[in-house]
Length: 533
Image 1 (cartoon, rainbow, N blue to C red):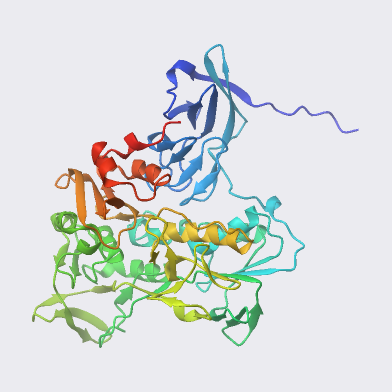
Image 2: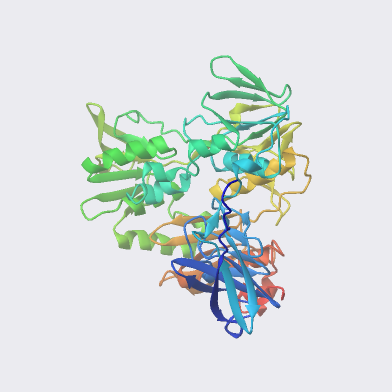
């Protein structure tokens, strides 16, 4: 007979008085090195890990919406009752701890060795035995989110994910930020190691898909092989827009779209003292902010007279441009590249059409994205994208998401194509449910962030706007700009301490396009309009 072993019971910790726990807010306490988030729900106390699973933001500073919390940094959403990860970004859920109220004190039970987070799904959650084949074309954020959600929802067939970059899904958003700054390693970019994906029963196939035939439900692979699927989620992402100039094939001309691109760029930085970036979109301006250094000049060539004016309005765009220039970035606006001066196999200067020339050790082509829609046959096109319905369905047996998807935006009822990482993750999760028969319309609120000498938070989506209302101070880089169309707020941009986008996000979960008049009456404070619990 084996010796009897007593199970270790969780340690009980008296953490604070119930009276010190506000009825609507969030409070962080520490049990040793472990930080725990507390939220009062009537007579109950909810206790979870206190930091976001994405970048470790302190959730005590987030916006509470009922029994959910919106992360203050990148707007991941968690359920405070269960710890579940409701909305991306982030990989993993919050750990949940049992809490009780005894003699007016809050007592939390913490198992030995407990951490702040727990996995989204475990290998034991993977069901098997089914004969259906679900294919995922694209190994990015959308594809991973779809695969993980299929496991979570109990799909028991094959999950085959095609990863043309020959590595597991990684954090693409960090390529132009932390990675270029040397603050994140190649290994740390991976969202999940290959072994974990395999343990979840996700097959990673490195062979490239050359065509998705919706009519025959068949993938045509490089080399001539085919794979028949029952359902397919197409999220192949985008290529870098081509830099079509003589000399653009020179060894020191690079793009920044993939891990390989970023690795190549980073390896060349040591010898680069004069960097020229062609293009003033998000990738170009983020790279400019990341690569600036005391011993290195960075010049941005922008065809636009005022970068980001179309997206953010002229006042915000002027301030963003002024900030880049004040930090030392030489932004040449209203400029066109006329040619490249090449010596040997290297570009030594970029010539502008006005006759000027900029010396260069390294040239980064940041001309935008070219969505990989050519992979898909048998589906309708909409502009540069594949048109999908409210469930992200492009054709029978085929759903699409991420960069290639033109989808109905809940706030306006019109189709939009949005090239942002968090939206791609939202699409992946939703497509998994749709592939399994869930007909719920996609209603995700778009959000993205951009690192340009500070974290810019953009919530919602406004192709155009009648008015930009600004609360806070542009000059102090602390403001929220509200974008108004036909009397409704469709989007907002926040920066610094005056960023109100988390509260607006909470409001948009109830009302995707809040009325301008209501926000004005509330002093442009979205928190004042939130429903009371």
